[in-house]
Structures are given as structure tokens and as C-alpha cells.
Length: 214
Image (cartoon, rainbow, N blue to C red):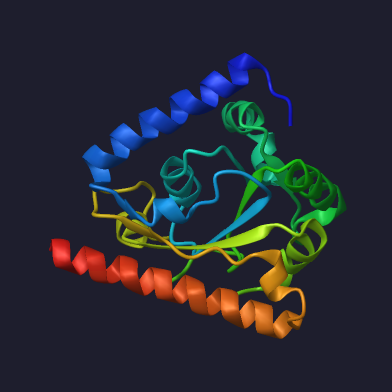
């Protein structure tokens, strides 16, 4: 997708700034970055622990990520400016919506990367929840590679009950990508089960790495 120089520089500025802040506040560590495909259509599938998660996953990638944002967030003026500046794709209350699906497919077919939290909502206990089928249409129609990501520590920093984040140790584990050729003949249930298995493995590794630090 063609973007202005100003938008590209703004995204890079935010990514670098967030990396520095995260190292200071969260002692963040990322493993598996060498597994990120350097180019080509990519759907990043991560567990969801807190409001920090889009930022945490985004700063872990050198590639620009496309984000989905609830349509209600566009009603809050300061936040609307920010998510517009990042070219966020509106997400309706019922799911990605037809408009969001079309725009997401357009960007994926242009060879970009899209971040999705397939649990559909933030965890209530820090564990990986049930993976919902919402990502399937994009995976099937875009023929993008699927990249599992697991994080641990974001829930400790910003659980649902807290109004603001607190300092914590956060680890992110990036898993092995799954190419479209690998899952072409799989059923939807098989693909969901495999993505859930891989996200859980990444989450378990991130948690183990955090425990070693402590």
C-alpha cells in the first residue's frame, strides 16, 4: 500500500520510541524474530493479555503491521487521530465486518502484514483462551502465511481490573510460520486447533523465559 513519507516516518518513530520505553518499563525481551518472513502476505496471530498488546507486538517487528480497531474507538477524538495516522482498519461490534474484511484482504494481497488477536477479547486470568474462527476467512482468501505469537507478563502489567499499566517483565515468543501450502487441505477445525496449539506453545515458552529471569 503506498503511504506518504510522513506516515512511514511517523510509524518508525513510534516503533523505536515504544521499544525504548518498553525496555525501561517492562524489561521486554523478544525471541524468534528471525522467524518473521521479511516480505509477503502475513497474518500475525497473538494471544491477548492487555491493552498494551498491539504496541508490544508491533514493536517486536521491523515490518510495518496493520491493526484492527473497534469502530467505537474512532469516536474518541485524540485516539481517532492516532489510529487514523496508523491506518487502522475499523472493526465492528459483530466482528471484522464486510468493509473491514475487504480492506484487510486488500492490504494482505498487497503483501502487507496484519495483526489479529484470535481469542477475540483480553484474557481474564492470563491464560490463552479459546481461539475463535474469525481469522479463517482472511487466511483462506488471502493465502497469507500465518505467524503465531505468544506473550506473557502483559496481564501482570495491565489486567482488566486496573485502570493503568504497571511496570512488569514481559516476554514475547515468535513461533514458526505456517505457509498457505501447508494448510490448504486442512479443515477449518484442524487449522484452528493447530493455530491454538502453536500460540499456546509460544505462550508457554514466554512464561518459562520470564520465570528464568525472576
